[in-house]
Length: 201
Length: 201
DNA sequence: GTCTATAACCCGATAGAC
DNA sequence: GTCTATCGGGTTATAGAC
Picture 1 (tube, rainbow over the protein chains, first blue to last red):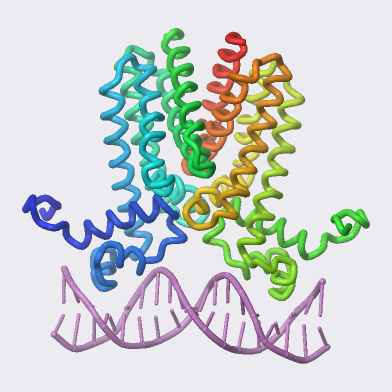
Picture 2 (picture 1 turned 90 degrees about the vertical axis):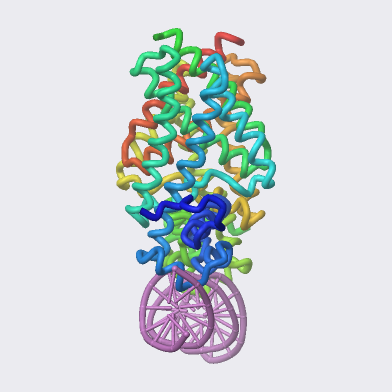
C-alpha cells in the first residue's frame, strides 16, 4: 500500500507530479496538443520515470489525469452545493464559481475533462470511458443535492444532466469569448430549471 | 469573382474539397489530431494544392473550415426553428434533430466547431475568433426566433446563449456516453426555459 | 494550378547504464 | 526508480518541375 500521503510533508513523488502536470496541460490545451515530453518537463520527471509509472504510455496517464481532474471538480461541486441555500441558488453558485475562477488564468485553465473528452470519442475508448465516468460523477453529485432538497428522483436526474451540460457548454462559450456572460446566463437558467422542477415535485 | 457554383454540375474544385474534408475531420477528431496530409488525402488533393489555396497553412484552412461548419449548422438551426410551432417546441426540436442525426455516424460526426474551439483557446487566436463567430451566429439565429415569437430582447439574448450552451454540452455528453438521453433532457430543459421566459415577457 | 520529393523538426516509445 | 540517448515514424511546410 503506497498511496500518496504516507509521509505528509514530503515532496510528491514523480508519479503524482506527472498526473498533476497532465491535468493542467490537458485542461489548457487538450490531450492531442500535449506531448509526453512536455508533461515530463512540467512534472520535473525524466522520460524514464514516465514510462516506469505509466507502462501504457500517454493514454495510460491520460486516464489517470481524467480521474484526478474529475475528483478535483467534484470536490468543488460538492462543497459549493452543500454551502448554499436554497437549492436553486446552490446550482447557480456553481456557475458563478466558474465565472469567478476562470478569468484568473485568463481563461486558459478550463475543464480538465471536456477537451480530452471530445478528442477521445473517435480515437480512444479508454479515454472516452474515463471522461464518461467524470461526467457521471458530477451529475451524481448534483442529483444528490436536488433529491436531498426534496426533488423527486425523476426530474432530479434530468435536471442534473442538463446542469452538467449547461455548465460545460457555458464554460466553453465563456472561454472562447473571454467573457463571463455565458456563465452568468447559465446561472440564471439553472435557477429557472431548478425552481420549475421543484414545483413539479 | 470565382465563387464556387459557377458551373453548377462541375465537380467541386480542390479548395472546396479540402474545406469539406476538413470540416468532417475536425468534427470527428478535432483540429490537433488531424494532419494536413490526412485532409489532403480525404479531399483528393495533393500537398501542392493545399498550400496553394491556403498559404497560411493548416491554421488558414482551419479558419475556413470553422466558418463553413458554422454556416452548415446555422442552416439546420434556421430551418428547424422556422418550421416548428410553438416557439418552445422549436428549440426542443433542435435538440431532437441532434439526437436523431448523431447516432447515424455512431456519434463520430459531432459539432464542427466545439472540439477545435476548446483546443484553440490557448493555442490559436485566429481559430478562437472564428469559433466565437460561429457561436455568435447560432446564438443570433435562436435569438431572432425568440423575439419573432414576441419575447422581449432582454430575456431572449440570455435564453439564446443558454440554448447554445445547453445544445453543445448535451451533445458532448451524448457523444461521450453514446446515448441520446442528454439531448432529450436538453430538449425538455429548453421547453422549460423558453416557456418561463415567454411568460415573463 | 497541380504534383513529387524532401527538408527540418517533433512525436511516442524504448534500451540500457546506473 | 532514475536518467540519457536514440530509434522509427510522424508532423508541417517548402522547393521546383510541369
